[in-house]
Structure formats: structure tokens, C-alpha cells
Image 1 (cartoon, rainbow, N blue to C red):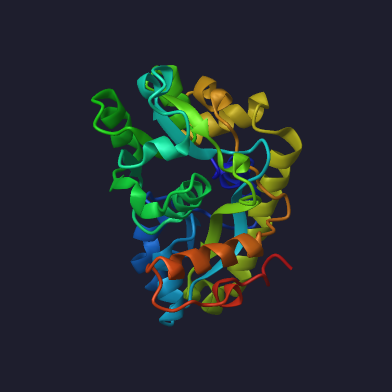
Image 2 (cartoon, one colour):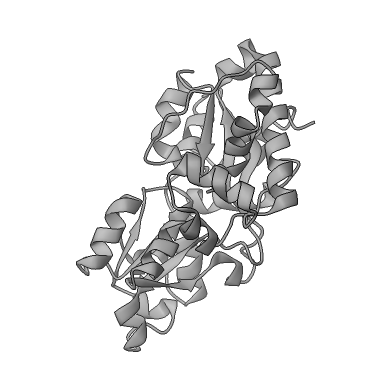
Length: 290
């Protein structure tokens, strides 16, 4: 759902006006995109900054984070902890501490889900390693909840809305409820080194069109009928489910929360995901926003 700015800009012809045609392709997570982004096979990548992304930059990869794509702020906790409804209803899980030793699903290793789960565990007096983390994709998480193969999952909307609709899980705790965690930079726009260096005018026009889409999203809101129709068209998720989802916050000017990115880098390094603790300045290129 945090691709809203992109989908709006495509649908409203903002890219087309600037001579740009987008070819969309899907990956399981932003971490899976790193090789293609490093090789310049992708011009633009969207998703959550990950340990793999920061490791690649530390090793000399030329891609950079260039703009915001989705943040958690108060009321915008769109990426959250979902817990099996029967465990909550029975009182077996009343707090994050009750998840110690239980199976908790995340989408991929070394991405922001690990970071937020780790911060939540610490809030409950646990460590990240006190949770039995297993890595499975969002669609398979639904099946895992149905078969009770997992007790909880770090899920991104609209998947929590689907889980709630089916009576499988409840939204247990959102990141904006964790003290000191917000604003949290969850998703970002990334440009390949080739795109930045060899096609800079196109990269700038792409950014200009994208930000027009972000401004429309910010002004109209996620519940606007036109926005819901656009999102349904491009995500194939029913508008009713999107409407029932907690929306992401998107900065209308594409501004990143650099402090949040810096804290993520520090956490990945402290927990053995990063070989080298890089500065946030090495990971970003803010010139296109300027």
C-alpha cells in the first residue's frame, strides 16, 4: 500500500507527461532486489531498507536511498505485530513478553521487520533471540495462521486487514505504540548507481512525477474514493480491504527520517547483520529531492 505515490503518478499520467514509462516487476522483499539493483538491471527499487542493502553499500555498491515511501507515525502503524486470535482471546498472550519461545513469522531475514521485532522484544524485557523467528512470505503467513503453524507475525497492511477479516489474528501492537520508535522510516525509494550517474535527467524527472503523486495522496488521504480505486487497480486488493487497513504515512515532499535510518543501521550492526557500521550519509542521496 505504500506504493500509493507511484500508482497515483502512473494513473494520473504524471510520468507520461515527463516522457517516462514504468515497467513494474515484483520481488519478495527489497533485500531480494539488491543484486539486480547493484547490477543496474533495475533503475528504481522500492521497499524497506535492509541489512543486505547497507552491507552492499559498505562494499561499494552505487545505489542509494533517495526518497521516502512510507513511515510509521502516530495513527499510521501500517506495519505491525499480529497475534493469533485464539491466543489473545484465551489470555495466553497478553503482552509481547508472552511471545517468548513462540513462533513469530517475518517476511525475510535482516529487514526492518527484524529490527522492529527486536525493539518490541526489548520493550517487553526480552531480546530478539528470545523469539522463535521463522521467515515466510505474507501470503503463506495467512495459511500458517489457519493451520496454527505460527503464533504471531510481523505483517504489513493489507495483510493484517485480511487476517482480521477472516478471524485468524488481531492487530496486537503497532510500532507507533512503542515508545521512542517513531517516526520510523519503513519504506524508501532507491536508485541504482547507473541511474544516478548515467541517466540523471531521467532520474530527476522520475522523482518530480513521483512527488506529484505523493502530494495527491497526502492531500486526499487513503480513504478517498479515487485513491481507493487507483490502489485497487494496481494492487488487486479489494477497496474494502484497503479501506479497513491502517494506512502508511507518506511525506508529501519525500523527506526521509534520517535519524530512524541511522538507528536501524546501528541495530543491524549490534546484532551481527552488518559487517561494517556505515554512516547514514553514505546510504542516501538527497540531491533529487532538493
